[in-house]
Amino acid sequence: LAQARPRSTHHSRGHPSHPPPVFSASNRIMAEEEGSWDQTIEEWVISEGYCCAGALAQIADGMFYAAAPVADEAGWAIVYKDDHEEDILQDDDTTKKMTINEPACLLAAINTGKAPPGGLWLGGLKYNVVRYEPEFDVEGGTLCICSAARPKKGV
Image (cartoon, rainbow, N blue to C red; front, side, top):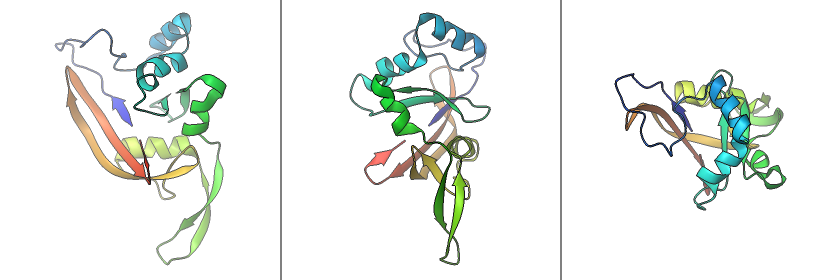
């Protein structure tokens, strides 16, 4: 999970083949004119075979707006599940039914580096936050990096 931070005006933008650092309304319009972000994710993230899926979400609310692989909407099935009920282990070793809202989970993780009380859930699967670097330096700017893992999977 990475959140692009606005770049300073004195830094160069970087390589032209890289995606825009911040996804603004004008970037979304440009993507719609050139094709969907789904296809862009497929090309930039999935095509090399290193990732099984990729997605983009709004920083304002954590809602996904694009996912890949595109065929049969397979990316959406991997990265997102509608609100669902889960039994969440409590401190006293009992379980409590909780409604999981995955966009809220994503937003909490990227903003705080911690999972919300019910955990970090993506695609109906629970992940553990394992790394958080809110000011990770990259060429020309910084990114907020939040990495999470579960058995044989990672985001």
